[in-house]
Image 1: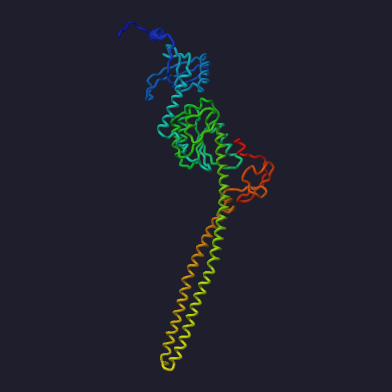
Image 2 (image 1 turned 135 degrees about the vertical axis):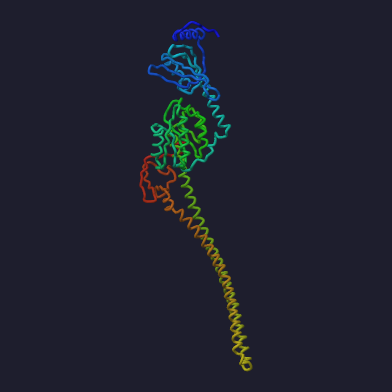
Length: 466
C-alpha cells in the first residue's frame, strides 16, 4: 500500500476524494435500490435514503440521494401517473444517478431520471409472490367458504373513525328504509401509508381476542388514489383474514382493481356504501324467506290438525258399534248362564229338601259362590276390553293435543312477540312491494299496537336488477 508523507488538511483530503470520485465516476449510472426514507422539504427538494438488502432483509448497502426541486417537479408526477403509486418508502426503484461528493455532507447521488416500469414490475412480482404463497398454504379461499349469516346484526368495522367512507357505511346502515337494527363496533385503524399493515393487522387481532360473537367483519376506507390500494397487497393482512371464523367484507377497492385483501375476503365491494347496501339486502332476503316459511308452517299445521280430527272421528265411528255389539254378546251369554244356574238350583233344592234339610245351608253357599264366580268372570271380560279402548282413545287425544300446541306456537300473536310484523293492504297480507302503489294506505300490525302508513315510494328489487 502506497503511503503519502505529505500532510493534508481535512478539506484538502476531501478535495482529493472528490476529484478521484468525479474523475473515475464521472458518468451517469442506472442504480436499483429500495427507498427506506423519503422527505420532501418546503423548497421542493426530495431527500431519499436508498438501501440494498440481503435475502434476510439485512441492509448490506446504504447511501443518500437527492432529487432537486426542478427535477422533482417533473419526476414525481411522472412516476405517480405511470405507476398509480406515489414515490414512497418501501418501494423498489431504478434511478439514473450521478455520484457527487461534498465536504460537509459526504458522498451522495443526484437523481436525474426514474424508470416506472421497473417499480411496476417489482410490485407485480411481490403481489404474485403473495398470492402464490397463500395458494401454496391452502388458505386463499378459506374465508370465502364460510356460510354467510342469514341475519347479520353484530358487525365489527375496521376503518378510520373520521374517514368519509366509514361515515357513509354507518349512515347507510343506520337509516335503512326497512328499519333493521345493527350493532356496529368500530376498531380504529390507519388505512393508508406505511402504518397500514401494522394497524389493520392489529385491529383484526383485537377483534379475534375480544371474544365477542360478531356475525361479520367489515374493512372500509374513504376515497383515495389507486396508490393507496397497494398497501392492501400485503401478506400479513391477507393471511389474518383467511384465519377469521366469520365472513370478512371489504369496501376498499377501485372500479378496475382488486387488492390481495379483496381477493381473500368473503365479499369485495368498490365502496363502503355498497357494503352497507349488501348487508341490508341480505336482511331483506331473510325476512322474505321467513314470511314465506311462516305461511307454509301455518297452512301445513292446519292441514295436519284437520286430518287428525277426521281420523279420530272415523276411528271413533268405526269402533263404537263393535264395542257395543261385543258387550251385548257377552251380556247375553252371562244372562243365559244365570238362567240355567237358577233353574238347576231350584230343582235340586226341591228334590233334596225332604231328605237333606240339614245340608240346606251348605248347598245354598255353594250355589251363591258359583253365581259370584260367573259374575266375576263377566266383570273380568269387561275389564280387559275397556282399558284397550281407553288407551287407544288417549293416544289419539295426545296426537291431537300435540298438533294443537304446534298451531298455538305459530299463532300470529306469538310470532309478532318475537319481533316480526304483518303489513296489510285492503285487509290482505302484503308479500311484495308490487301489491301496493304510491298513495296506498297500509297498516302494520306489531306485537303492541298498529301503525297506519301511506306509501310514498317503492323499491322493487326486480326493477333494480333490470
